[in-house]
Image (cartoon, rainbow, N blue to C red; front, top):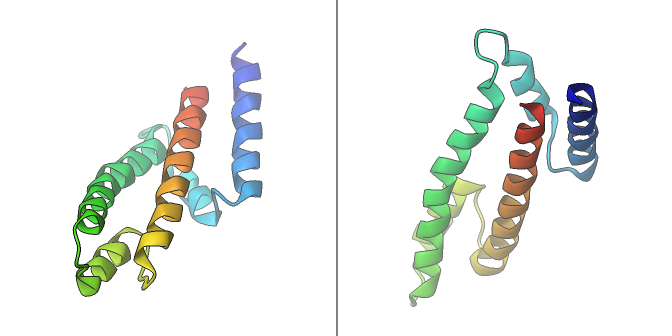
Length: 113
């Protein structure tokens, strides 16, 4: 059963790479993982989601109240994903991708365990 789960995890990882959800940076993170820290990649990803959840919430709050302070929104977007001047539409797309990737990676890490 463990081998089947490992194969499923490998298939899912390949799928995430093919779909563009993961890239070479994820592979580099995995290369840093070793027996001394077997959950390194998962911990890094969890840290990212902990930090970025705060950015997402701050951006949501800023977009709920007008008038928009675009300089502040741009700074928050830069901190989260990079500089953007089309905040509202791009933010919704980024948020959807964020939620999708988080769900997929959580499933992947469960399979890896």
